[in-house]
Image (cartoon, rainbow, N blue to C red; front, side, top):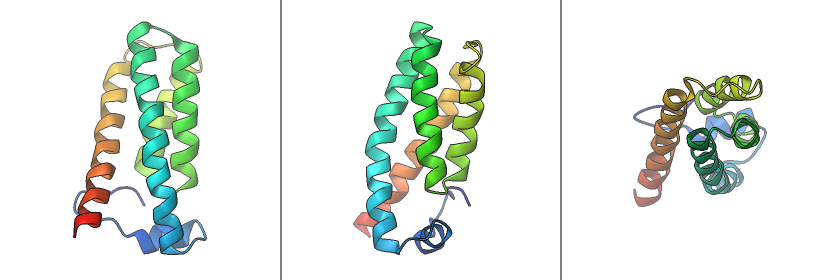
Length: 116
């Protein structure tokens, strides 16, 4: 299950990774912090043309999103990771923008959940 535009079933996601909902939410909030930093590093690395730095950031993002069952984020990060691992940055700007949008959607859903 990935991030849905209108809702996020934390209980289902938590069950998929073998956690209680409260534990999963704690990890998800930590993910938002660390993945946000990884995403900034990735965006910077792609802009600089630094494939090694891009790979480090995309690989980290891929691993943490996959561990939490965030499949839509994982799939995007995997595509980027597969490409930058080979030292190829051409065309990654658009994929990184898509990853940023999906990440921001998650952040928005968590903010909505916290306020409501």
